[in-house]
Structures are given as C-alpha cells and as structure tokens.
Image 1 (cartoon, rainbow, N blue to C red):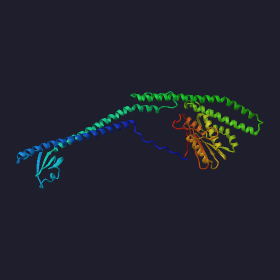
Image 2 (image 1 turned 90 degrees about the vertical axis):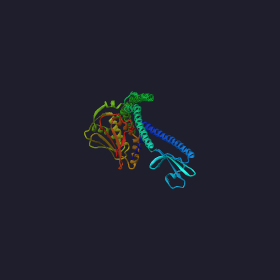
Image 3 (image 1 turned 180 degrees about the horizontal axis):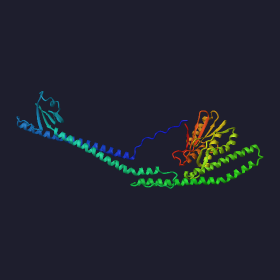
Image 4 (image 1 turned 120 degrees about the vertical axis):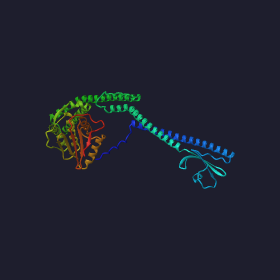
Length: 448
C-alpha cells in the first residue's frame, strides 16, 4: 500500500525579513526618486541659465554690430563666437546644427553649450565652454550617489535592528508555546520583555485558552475514571454469575456456547475499562505501575486464554520457541495489547493457524492468515485504521490498541503480504515510558 506524501509547505519569510526588506526597498525608491527629481530640475534650470546668458550676449553683439558694422566679437575663454557665411563649407559640425540652444555639444574637442541664430547673410554661433563645469557636476553627482548609498546601508541596518527588536517578543512567545507540554497542566505563558499591547492581548488569550483546555481535559479524565470504576461492580457481578453457572454443569450445549460468548465479551469489557483508565493517566504516573514481566510466561497465559476461542473458529494457535525475554511494563496494559492483537488475528482468520513469536530483544509478533482474496479487503481495513477513520471488529479495536501502545511508549506496526498473511509487531524498546507525539493521531505504522 502506498501513502500520499504531503506537499512541502511553501517557504515563508520572517516578519523581521519582511520589515527590513520593505524599509530598504522604500529607501531605494525614495532615493532614486529624489535623485531623478534633482537631475530633472537641475538640467531644466541649467538650460534656462545658458539660454538667458547666451541670448543676452548675442543681443548685445547684434546691437553693437548695428551701430558699428565693423564690430567684431572679442573671443575669450570660455565664450567664443563663430560667424559662418551662408553657402560656405567651413565648420560642417556647426552648420549641421539647427537654430536654437544646444547643450553638451563637442566643439573643438571641448564640451560646450551652443546658441545658433541664422541671419540673411550668415549664421552666428555663440559657444560657451562648460567642460570644467560638467566635470565638477559629475563629481558632485558621484558624491550624491555615494551618500545616498551610505544612507541606505545605514538606515537598512537601523531597520534590521529595529525589526529584530520588534519581533523578538514574538519569537520569545513562539518559543514558550513550542515548549509547552500537553501533559503539564496549569502552565501559563509569561509576557516577554518589551512586548507591545497587541502581544499582551495574544498572551492573555493563549493563557485563557490553556486554562479552559485544562478544565476540559480534567473533566474528561474524571468522567472516564468515574465511569470505569462505576462499571466495574456490575461487570464483576455478571462475571461471577456466568462463571458459577458454567461451573455448575448440566447446561445444554447451545446455552453453554452463549454463556461462553458472554464470558468472552465481559473479559473484553474489563480490559477495555483498564485500557481507558490507563489512557486517562499521565504517562509518568503510568510508569510507576511497571513490573518486571517475562514475555514467554505472559504469552503462554494469553495463548491459553484464547485457545478455546480459536478452536471454536476451527483455528489453531502456534507458538514458536520463546526466548527468555524480560521487559519492564504495566502488566495489565501489556497483557491487553498482546491479547487483543491475538484476538483480532483470530477474528480476521478463517483457516489455518495464527503464529505467535518473540524476536530479540523484546518484540512480540503475531501473524495470521486470511482467506484467499480477503487479504485486499483486510489490508484496506487496516489502512483505514492507520488514517484514524476506520474501525475493525472483535475485541478492543486496533485504533485503541495503537493509542495504548503510543501512550506507553511502544511501537505498533503491521505488514500485509502478498501470500495472504498479515503480521503485527509490538516493539517494546525503549522501555522508558514517554508522552505520545501530539502531532500523530494514531501510532499504527505500516512495515515495508
């Protein structure tokens, strides 16, 4: 049988990482916006200054030329004038430009801003050398970018520090919640240092929920314990009456058969009550009832107990040679687990024999044969029990046996083979009892 593997959970960013990334992203966008705005405003203002300055110079020159046709512009760095006669072939670089202002134009291997005005006889070109100014402007822009980068790094570090300080109470709260033991009652969560009011609300809600859960579990355990104890008296009376009736003899075969079934059912109910009481106990308290048990002696006792039941179904129970294995466990719990597994094996078998053996160091194996094609239906039934949404017949169910094994720290596994055999195995190692994993609903696993 194959089991569906749950899809891996998607990777999630921590709140600290989200906050830090968001702040750094905002700072980067803000810095780029400020730099872009500064560049646009600076270029616009610069073009307006050049246009105003050069037009003023050109108007002054034309005014002087009107009063004195022989007047020549006095070229001096950084301002020069070129007068190009219409139809000439000189200065093709300047003739190729259109009228108006042109910024950052290379003239005579220097970067200049040029104002061109076409007249009826010539083209006037007024050029201002701005190469040194552009070099200083480039250095200033580099300094601006460097300062912006340094500011982003500094503010990013401060954002990471602030986010870490902000999320530290949440991490402390999560650590406390993760360390909670369901078996530890009345344990509250402490409010972490530097917590906000919102975290205080969460802590109060968690403690309130924990208190209600403790009350619920206490009521459940009290009910199970009370109900189990109250049922023991009538069950003991019925068992005594049935036993006395059977010992009296002279009963019709049909009546004796029915009384035997009643006796078997009473034994199952008695074991069920013991199991419910065990499950209602804390595993640490259950550990106090451990005894030193011989597996061989216990299995011989259980096999003798269920031999009649097997014979009535036309089956036999075969016990392999049992090694001298000793375990430390609650006697009644181990007896119930092995006995009910044997009963389930007999219930689901129709022909042949049920095999019981012990493997070193302390594992009990029960193997039964189903009939023909029933193996598929039986394997499907066991798979439903594994998932916790199925029931099995006869005695104490596999789901409850599995919970008992998990509660006692044992491992219960099964294997359905292609030769119509089903094998159950209880591994009693390690001997230390421990609380069950709360993430697992049922501890029955399939052997591969």
